[in-house]
Length: 91
Image 1: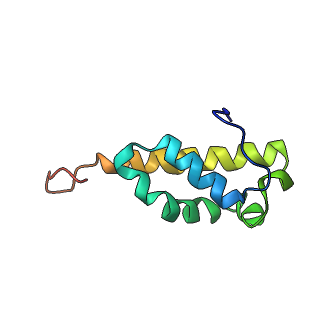
Image 2 (image 1 turned 180 degrees about the vertical axis):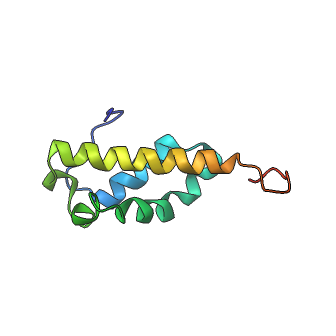
């Protein structure tokens, strides 16, 4: 995980996921980050750590959490540019 600024180890995993999503999403999708964080938290490898503080999770767990946040962001970005079955551009 790249470190723009150090993540406070007292931050909740949920807060860190929101921050990661905001960094990964285009500005017009930033408002969706809190809802998308819940989606990341539902992943079986993330769920056991979602209520913890960032400093309580191991480096490998952090990498899994960051990977899942990135995958959710990619999925949302891809969906934001999707076209409906009728050929209409979806936003």
